[in-house]
Image (cartoon, rainbow, N blue to C red):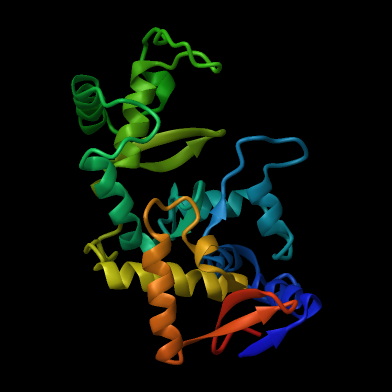
Length: 264
């Protein structure tokens, strides 16, 4: 069993997150793409005070970072928007690993809203005919709702549902408004769109988490993924047997996992 102090564990996380060297990820456009690829995702922040937190995450790792570089990465299809544990920018090379969640929503798992098939078809037909559209391109009244945040346009709910189940993607942002298009018009032809097996998906979740964070527990890797914790725990045990990851004891009592060869 490997032992780390809290100080050592914190250093491992900081090194893995790439904020110990100013040019760890490169500079300019390439640096933005590299950062998102090596971190596995950057969470999108909807609140802006000084600047939205996803820009802080990139600015703190890249020399001369500009928000326009992130917009360019989305426009050039090196990065896409979807859901990690929350809304996030993800590397396009990992696109296929977004498919299990999308298929779950497509096959009945509920997200925020109840499905309205008629409204969803209307929204999808308009985008197919007219090209990319925003919520405000649909002239509709807000729905009635007892929710504390109030109601939403039926079109907004349909757009978000189609986005979550993979039929639409965010092609770009207009200000901070999502601009939606059909997924097949956004995904580059070169991108692998095959559904990963359960084993491939588990290995992706585990290895990406550990490579970008340095260490972590099964519960952290499975965070907000319903039913995944026992599957990830079992797979971590197998990866330990295969000598691909190791088990760590941190501060004498916390058991975590780490890659055999973390980034340095």
